[in-house]
Structures are given as structure tokens and as C-alpha cells.
Image 1 (tube, rainbow, N blue to C red):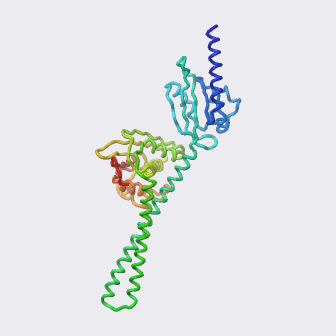
Image 2 (image 1 turned 30 degrees about the horizontal axis):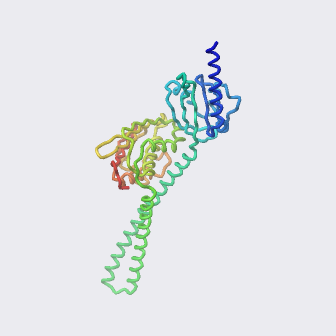
Image 3 (image 1 turned 45 degrees about the vertical axis):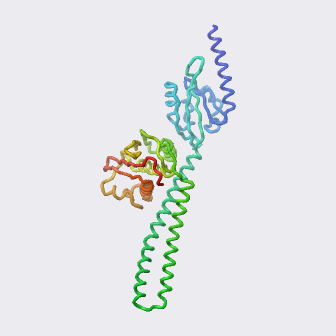
Length: 363
């Protein structure tokens, strides 16, 4: 009888403790007991997940659709069984994205699992910013590279004409020829200045904003995974990660753009009869960190592998794209003193290997 009374007192104390905690928490949180019964939730959780007071005391399986995440119960069971924290990104019924943390709730006195606390941190703006930034990076790089590329030929042509006119001047006395030459030379100098100013502003901007730093590859993969979350979810892509070395020195936005392009392509260029399966690894090879993205997609033949890194070249026309993604990837890797290698075979997939110099400082 005494033991039962003590249990009741303990439950009352636990309830009061949780009640006080949940009533003063400003982020969406849930308490689910060890029997998978929804016991409490914070006011923000009520708003974001369309929860009602009458849901309290109900099995979680009766309200799991509110979380727009079909594996939530399985994940809770894993945490209860292992007593280890689990973290995932999920999309809720209001189409917002959250970092979900499932933490084991342990009664210290008894060292007993009494359920889990589930916390949700809104990362919708972060995903939106990452997508916008990725788009801006691509547009920015493409604009600068295209301007520089497109101006080279006319500059070369004007230079040749100028030289030809100089030779004609030596043979004939043409009064207007010096004026024409002067105009052409002025135009030539103006065009050179355009390129010079563009490139100077680009590298000055990089030196102020896009400095190299020591980067954890795990954080880059997390950003890319969040940015590509809709594509991953729709395609049911499986991404396996095995990083033997996780730190590299690089410009963060450039490395994110490189990884984004490779993972995005791996998802995109997969046969429709199976889900994308991507393996991401990193190893040390001499003075390089080698970051690899391997897929089991449609693959490429030898001729396609030669064309894939050229600007505006798209060897597969079944998907949308401008044909500049891998060109930019190669440009950024080359500029950093690294290199990119490709192994591919039709019907068996591709492996892209990015060789990043350890301690690189050339970007």
C-alpha cells in the first residue's frame, strides 16, 4: 500500500514538474510517454500541428498524421530502446520545416525511461535562404564567367583589325586612318577595362565576404540536404554518408554549391524504375582530401564524360537544366588548385571525385 502511495506521489510530482515546464516553453514541444501516449504539448505545438486539448491521453498513432511525418512513432521507439537522442528534419502540416529532436525522458531516481520529449526548431527560413543563395551563386558565377568569355573573342578580333590597319597605314597615306585606329584602340581599352573591373570586383568581394575557412563537411551536407529536402522526399532518395575525414579548408558557399550540384544531379539522373541511392565519402590521399559522390543512376559513356564539364553542355536532355552546373563545379575546384575526376558507365551510375588540397589558400 505504501509503495502505491509513493508511486502516486511521484506521478503527481512528475506531472507538476512537466506542467510547469511545458506552460513556460515558447517552442513547439511534446511529451510522449513510454506507452506512446501523448501526455502534454506546448501552446506553440498546438498551433503548428493543429493539436487540440482532447488529444491529450490518446495514443500517438491516432494523431500522427498531424505531424506530416510517417516515421515519427518508429523514431520514438528507437529512442526509447536505445536512450539516445535522435535528430531529423521534418515538414509539418502547415508546410513549414523543423529540426526535430527526440530526447529520452529518464526519471533520475529510478533510472527508468518514462517516454520522450520532442522538440521542434523552425528552420523554414534557413531552407528558403539556402535555396535563394544557391540560385544567386549560380547566377552570379554564370554572369561573370559568361561576360568574360563572350568579350574575349571581340577583343581579339579588334586587336587583329588594329594590327591590319597599322600595316595599311604604312603603305598608304590615309588621312582618316589615325582617327579610326584611335577609336578602335579606345574601344579595345574600354572593353578590357570592363573585364578588369568585373574581375577585380569579383575577387575583392570574395576576399571580404568569401574567405576560406576550416569547414566541417557534415555541416555542408546538412545544408545541402535541407536545400534539396523536397527533391529527396519526392524521389525517396537514400543518401549514405561515410566521412573518414570531415574537415577541409575552402570557401563555404563554393563548397556548398559544389556538393549541391553533385547531389542534385545524382537525384535527377536516376532511372524512373528505382529510387536514387547516393553514397558520399571522404578520404585522405597524400596532400588531398578526396570528397566523392557516387550514384547508381543512368551513367554516361566515354564521349559524354568528356563533354559534361563544358559550359552549356547537357548530355541528357530528359531533365531541366542550363548545362552550367558541372562547368561551375570544375571552375571552382580548378581555381582552388584541386581537380575533379569522373568514373561512369551507362546503366551503372557515376562517381564524381573532388580533390581538395589540404590547407588550400588559392581561392
